[in-house]
Image 1 (tube, helix red, strand yellow):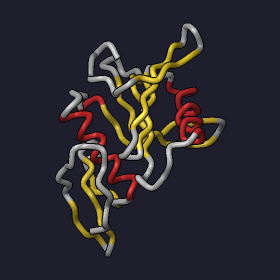
Image 2 (cartoon, rainbow, N blue to C red):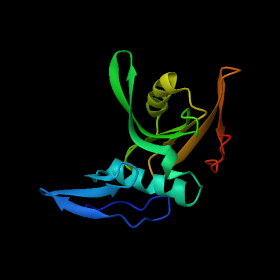
Image 3 (cartoon, one colour):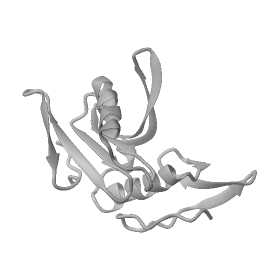
Length: 153
């Protein structure tokens, strides 16, 4: 297995296999094995934390959600939907060695121009940031922690 740094998330037991000399991890949301990159390692731990500890329903979560932005295809790392199908949360992951910079926030903000979710989360597995959008006042505020799941998100 590739050496992964400890994350600021509960450790998860991952289902791993080697396929054609590539280490893969089972993604329960996509229901398939995908390459275990450092970013994927963060995604698997973060989504498990969201479902197991914060109560987010896996049935309302999707990984690698496609969207079109300025005639370009993009993919959101994770989107949590409400029961009516509208996006509640967008999550953008980076590898633990990648700093969370303004460009990461710019990236997720561009995705949100299309999705209009209520919350934006950025994580490299070590540091997690969450913003609550306020569309009435055209602003946002950083929250001290990731909110637990509520259908009202």
